[in-house]
Image (tube, rainbow, N blue to C red; front, side, top):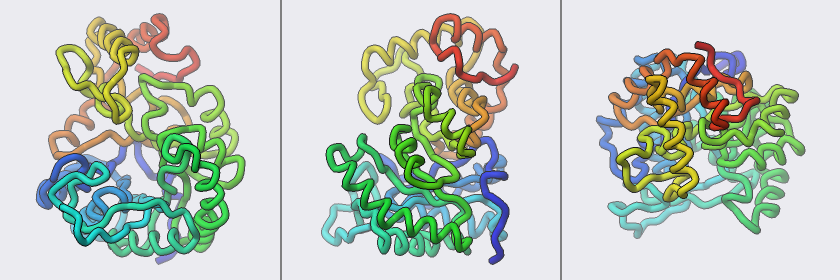
Length: 339
């Protein structure tokens, strides 16, 4: 298959995250997974992200089968990840959550950033996804947040092996772009100091609640010509549900701390004053930054796809964004959408 143009040129404003169809936290039927992918494609989504870790291969298999039926010409842009190899677990209880997934696949993921592991992972993913090539390849979950004291060792392992493999895959045209898929912008800065990347999938770190990435990271991306895909725009759901009348509030995959609950409540009050839907503001806010190419909301059903499309197309008055700035609920240097 001849190389295509840079996939980032045609990624679209919103994309599909594949963790849910890998049975994140709860089982999703084959039919429901297919219907959700189809609904996203029919709604105009042309970027689909997944990873071997999501259901231990289940998400890749489901996404590959769905797109093979829905998009036989492979017009969609597909990304997956390397750095977590699938280790057999023949005696695992497949009915219970493992690493957050209730998957029928008898595997679990283990970190491996070596050259051979990355090359094998790429080829295994390509087969599961039924693709001639992978458009975007991310290295998964580098950084201190994930690896703690082992971070330096893991990063060195990646730079010595996995990064070399990713560069070879990009140089050969086997992948169109490479980057990191992570939950912290600091590791992206560190990686950019040692290598050449096209895109970063940053989850939860440039949102209506958090903009510390504006200080040094996003300016660095602008200088280097690196695009950003924003994952986790709802910060694990607290910006989708809000906090009023809610219990079991989650932020960043954990119980929400009191200062975050208070901040969301303040944002909700501004939303109410200006008749703005909170999740609509959460989805639209990151897209105002010129380095942000795409936002990936969580969607696990056709109904959620429809809601996300509605949120993205809901008009939000300029006075709302001004009010957030005046109340110091977003940074004064944060770009905001036009009315």
